[in-house]
Image (cartoon, rainbow, N blue to C red; front, side, top):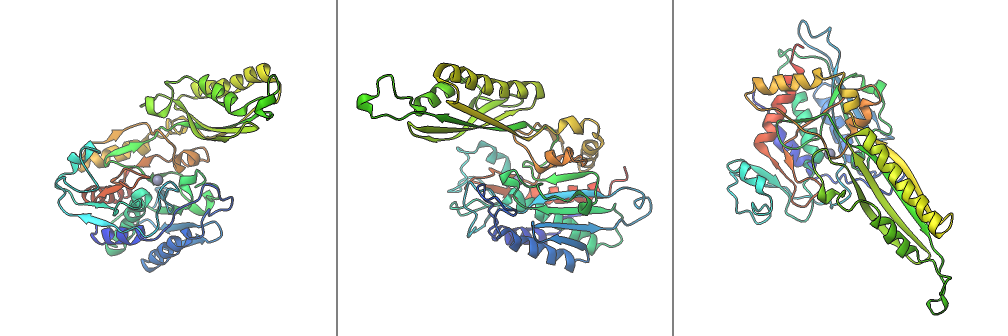
Length: 403
Ligand SMILES: [Zn+2]
């Protein structure tokens, strides 16, 4: 049951279509160009005999494959989800994918001294960009792997499998990938996102996430006559930042350790804005972190006058483990498939979130599967052809599991 080799060509084709999303846009999709890939996929799905349902307005492609074979008709549909967009952080236009056959180190872009895990990929074929853009394996590797499953069941009509539901979604990278996700049109009550990295890793725990926007209102006066008059918002912002625990930042934390991340700051004496993201796997600690932000704001208001600091906090997503704990069979099936393939399954907590996290809280338990891609959101992004092939095989086997 080898993966269809065509799917690497598919992947190379998808990454050359610019689908970068835009964090500052208010509409969905955040960029119209994501529709180019959505429309191509709809066409490809249709040509493979799959029933599609394209929400052109919001740029979601849904597809349904009926079950085949006795025993499978009574099993509920299983969903696979991947996202169309690429990260706004690095350019995704004019991506020129390069295939490095039989990687042995020594690539001008992918240097083992910079990325030690590359030594594990010696002997594999790697796909990278030319170094001026990201590659877009996040998440076009996932899309290609799902499309390979469609191709496989099309080419092998005799192969039994469960009913499969597919969704390709926009704007995941802006945190809005499920904003217009229609659970009814999707039609599966359990699913996997195919949006991870290292082959063999399944993720079913993620951060609780919130965003804090801290606005500091100062009072500008000519510096020559500012004594006892001026309130410098820049300095108060620095004081705010200095009151947060210095070791609880992304660059000092790992595993289950949470953090405050000052993502953006801009300002002047009159007004300074700080933008934080707050992350913690543990719900109680997460709530406590938000409280810390509020209490610092309250303290500074006491010190500098009411209305000086204005902190607004918005929850972004919650840890899917809260939902997944009652649906661990979804994890068990992947473990079974990987052990059948003679591979090792690793579970690890996501230090981020996925569309699956939001879907978990909308009635679709949805852990995240690997893709075989690495160094996401970077000019150094790459994918291992061999890991992509194994992932593609894994997806087919999951759809064929009788449990
Ligand atoms: Zn992704």
